[in-house]
Length: 254
Image 1 (tube, one colour):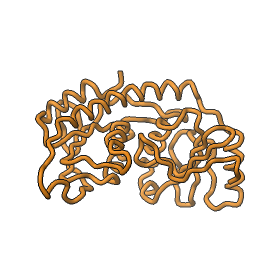
Image 2 (tube, helix red, strand yellow):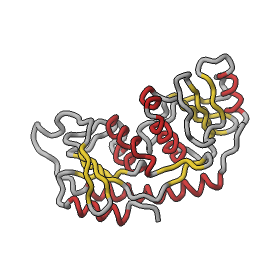
Image 3 (cartoon, helix red, strand yellow):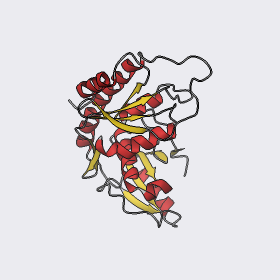
Image 4 (tube, helix red, strand yellow):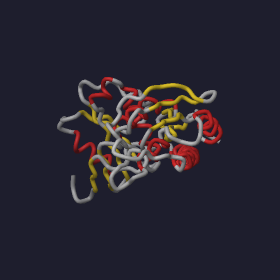
């Protein structure tokens, strides 16, 4: 890359736990580059979910580019990428420079902006509810607080239609991200090249203690809400059904 571009690898975004792989700022605005992880190659729906979340999180004028490996399956993202470039091929870097310099593909900005506005309103309500529920958190005293990190939640349903996941110990950020990615398709969809919020009720994610990101203590709570999960304390004055009723009432599209 040249001095005409600003390049950030694995950029940190306040609304997602797993961002795009490369973000390029150039004359045409932002270009986001994505590559499938080994897990996303095994489960292509996870890649599509990460794409949808990042399309919602990044500005609508962001151009998305996919760098493909020979083991990659078709993205199934319905024309969301301006280009698909082959990893290690001779022309990949010049092609990416051209896209970053002069947009080769115009997104449907009106659609993207309207979708983001609806998503932002739902996120605000979902995140606000998670913060309200956190006030009821009853911290466990003594050396046992926290304990071993949990990676695999159990599942159940609360209220009439709210799916719930229960961690027996403080979840790792990777476990929270895996859970969010595995079901982001019920919260967002990609239709004709643009991400759209789906009309679905949020899920509940119950934790004995809240995980924190260094320098941004509320990021896990925020990113979960953005992906359709209301994080709630296991130790609380509210019953599970009360939490389910609140989610059904507030954490949905208006």
